[in-house]
Length: 160
Image (cartoon, rainbow, N blue to C red; front, side, top):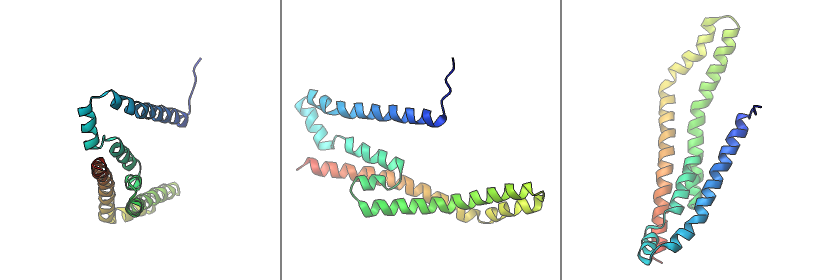
């Protein structure tokens, strides 16, 4: 007997397994620290342990600006998320519209008219490339900034 799973079900199961694994790792972290010697514990306090920095890093991977929001930099996080969303949509919307118009005009039977949306897209290629590169740069900056800021915050808090 074969069981067919919907791709959404499979992705939800994988995500659930991923979250359970992360939770098990997080639960085991304090126990591992308790087993360490005094010198190792001092090193973890001085370096910040890295758990919060990893959480900020993972947040930034999900959505640009989420790592900043995790670090309580609300304005910066919302601003980065807005910029990334605006730049990404400025690329994706024209491409999507051009493809839809291409296929709808192609079905009408006029190949010359079908190519017009693609030609308009080709003429705007420089703007689309600049916006695409901007989105990637914002994404990478958001990840690096969230991680570095959290590391600095952890190092500052460990000396208190």
